[in-house]
Image (cartoon, rainbow, N blue to C red; front, side, top):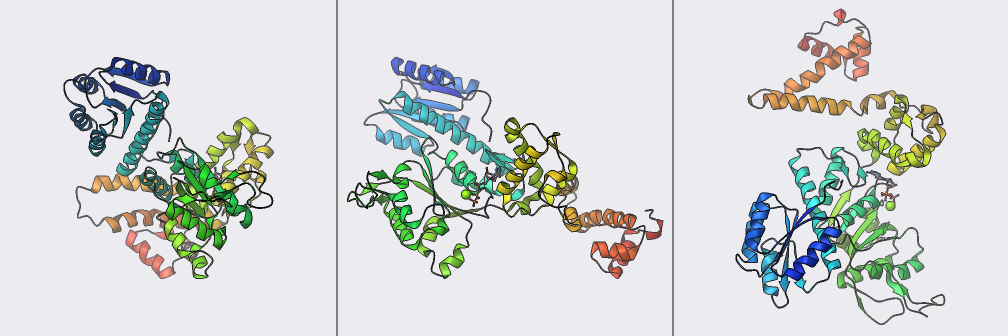
Length: 481
Ligand SMILES: Nc1ncnc2c1ncn2[C@@H]1O[C@H](COP(=O)(O)OP(=O)(O)OP(=O)(O)O)[C@@H](O)[C@H]1O
Ligand SMILES: [Mg+2]
């Protein structure tokens, strides 16, 4: 998702001159476009002139009180975030404000850093809400979500899920083959969450042997074991306030699974060799390319841990199941490495091969292949010989045409829109016929009118072909090769 190029518009409404001035100055220095007013009525006037992205609203002001102003602002522009400012001892009001749709509240006195962090998060959340709204209405095709590339419907599903779950603290299990982007998605979830300004800490169970993994996760006290010369903080502790990414969770040894589950349930940890119980506040995202269901049946993965982690599942599709995204990814990768490796183009035959390859290593493999080809293509254009992959099989090359499906879909959408009025039409047969007729003609043209060959290529029997030709009024003999 791209950040809006214009600075966000922030409105401050507070009757206290000093505070208003400090806020105004600080937010302006941080790059926001700031307007400051003294009371609720002025705030409402300013807002109806032109809406703001974010409002800092004092609750106790002369004239219309803050809560009423809040309600009116929300009615004027439901998607503007309002941060309510309250003096100590007015928590009640703060809670009421939250219930009435304020994004957050600040208890006075507060420091500027706190304000700036909150502003940043509120605006990020705002952008996310807009993105989700856009995805929901489907008005605009979204094919890029931050660093994630892909416009295949299965990727759009992934983006929608990220949008729905990012803001909450729900635990997510990311599944998918190696190299499909699980870590990238985990980072996206963190980025669009309220924890964005806090640490994102990744631990891979596959990369660290079991014995070390425990102290990696939980930390250890000095002297806890022979090599423990110093106290070491664990990843769970380091992720406090932020997000912990448990990569390759299927590779975690069973004893550690038990310990992890307990820590997640009790939200406390003890360092190895330590007595003290430490409270931790982390959001957990876990990933695996293993078949956890089988592992559970075989007793190698704890069922209760599985259910604890698998509150929401995001499954990343393998690249071969979203081939039409390959050209987009290639374009992205060429741009990504252009400064380092030089500007490169791709010859159509080379692109065909890339689209047709099966990609067992998914996007990571594609990335390696493209990088390598960029190095080899000293003439500036990547050719098939720069690729360590063979030509595409005939069947695959038809099935995978990256653009055909889209062209057809776009055309059909136009037709369907036109037909919507006469809803009774036999739309299905009409549309299938619309595709079938030109297909039959194309194949016959290619075979020079030879029905035996045509039936073979189409994978239907000759009688069926003959019947369909009659249905569509196609004269095979009249078709020129
Ligand atoms: N949709 C995508 N758009 C752009 N780049 C992607 C996408 N998916 C994956 N990548 C890139 O591919 C590489 C592998 O992605 P990532 O590490 O997230 O995969 P993974 O699923 O965690 O793999 P593994 O299971 O092997 O750890 C990274 O360089 C990442 O940037
Ligand atoms: Mg990974």
